[in-house]
Image (cartoon, rainbow, N blue to C red; front, side, top):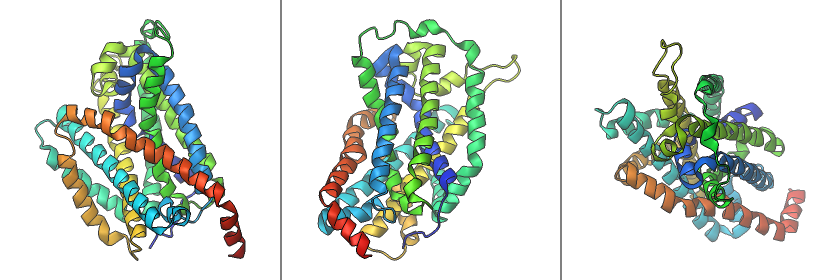
Length: 370
């Protein structure tokens, strides 16, 4: 049974913003700089433009079936057998991304903040809070995001404002030294994190009060979050330089360590760590909720909540074995995940739109009859 509670435009905008910021703000600069060097900020801008295009594709597809999730109308478009198989694969994709996010969270905390705490303990405690939040449904998730959003905005603005005195524009030179090739490679890397992952919001269209107007909060949330991601990449280069931005695992966290206010206020990186803990928390909740809802719909179950706890335990188990360490995590995320992200984030929605166009008359006739 699908949750019949609704969210408004502002709440949807907040969820999109927080999800897009997610884990990206703290580790994406290293990935982009690895490919594009000092032109990584150009890659970030191009990736946002592509992300906006993706939002238009998702909105166009989702509004064709405003009262259904992607796992539901895939069966209408592709047939029950094929639709269910692809829906299961999509759910597995959501599940794997959520597992990687939880793994990254544990690695970050055990490396930088609480090194003496076992990673499994971090995962377990965090998973308990995630399950608690997911259990109460999409409206509770949205309302929680609505409360935390102003705090996140103030903290982000605080970080970037106090970093301006550390800027060195020489770090941006030479611009496009090796042409557009490196920038385009950086763009491709950035598109997968997080823009292609936003396909998960095709599971949330039925919860929106005005599905036909969903493109506005969707675009706004993506654009504002993308702007902050551009700033994080740009400031990483301007303040700490290309070499450190590339080889530091979490360059934005290292960036925040540079802030010192009148030699009185230091250790501001804790602010960034708090931002990241909150945004990745919401991102995992959104992915887990979508995966649980997808399972419920694929197998035509009446209730979704009874399966949430076993799914959470499975997520906790998979998180322990999905990667061995930070190095294997980076290899898995950079080499294994991109093809899946491209398949489910771009090729699948485009394919479904094409199928709808071919069979449009049939669906329009059914809509008129109903």
